[in-house]
Length: 166
Image (cartoon, rainbow, N blue to C red; front, top):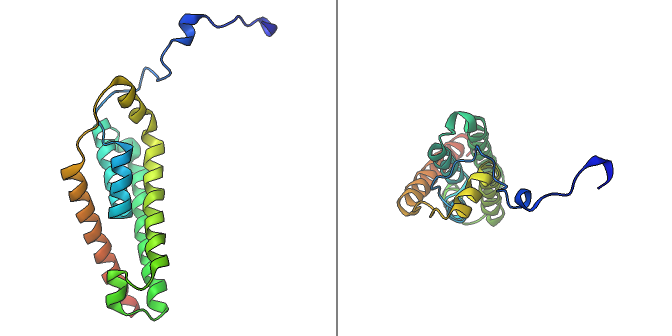
């Protein structure tokens, strides 16, 4: 080949593409995290990102990203509450999210953006789990708990915003 490079050998082509530092552990699958974020909101995405980071033993390393996600979630929910309050939406309608479909979709988009951040950070570990044949951890109990906690936190933020702006 040109430039003094030799053709790759068959053994080189069959080497695994995952690094030697990629640990294989049972994580919550990307699909489960996506659905929990979609249904539970941005704090649920942060919660699932934290739980996968904890399973990987990467919480200190992922802490800045987790904090960024939590701050984005809080800011997004408070901004949506502020917009709804200034538009004259009643406090009950803001809390239940009935009148402003655009704000609900905005918060849902924020949740999926938070999921995307954590997916990109943990993608190699999720791929290693899949390629090694490990089954994902069961997300049922954790997903329900994280979803409920997320909804309660969202309700508290919306209530604080409503109290401040209406």
